[in-house]
Length: 118
Length: 106
Image 1: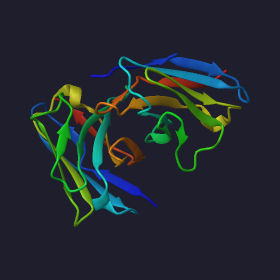
Image 2 (image 1 turned 180 degrees about the vertical axis):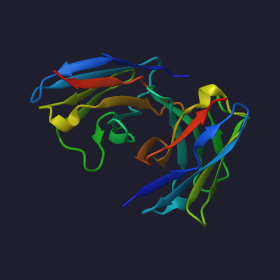
Image 3 (image 1 turned 60 degrees about the vertical axis):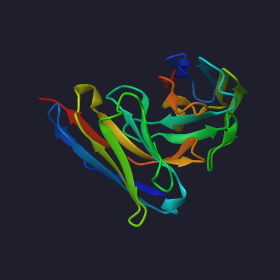
């Protein structure tokens, strides 16, 4: 059974940083691209970042480019998102999602909530 | 950026009836379209990909159609567990989602 378990969210002041993690199990992690997708309270889904199966190709939405860094450790089946220079508009539930064929998200974690507020 | 527009925002349908949800892309996405279901407090669940292929374990009452810029998700004979939020997503040019359609009990 595929499982994705996020952690690392919390309350942070504007301009602050967090490191989000996603522990994956139930599939061969190193064979699949992975992504982060976020959802602001009461809002829709918003793609944030993706990374290739090998980890050498990261991709970012324009809204987070230069502030967020995606990475993965295939030896530990872990996906990470370093989020810096946080803004109020970054407040959201951040979901870790498995990409199938680098096209659509076939499995999602339960999410971790990031609140940016002073 | 390809903008995805879903309609209606809210759809009220009685159990047992058919629901038809629409999704329009600002540019052609060919058949690179997926549908997701999201219930309150839960993560999204993949329903349909390739515009019309059901994901693993998705009941046959869910069907998708369309290509280019116009897409439809149809749920025949609505069950109580089908009342939820539904999102479309294009993957022709990166990834963008529609704003969602809330399917509520009439």
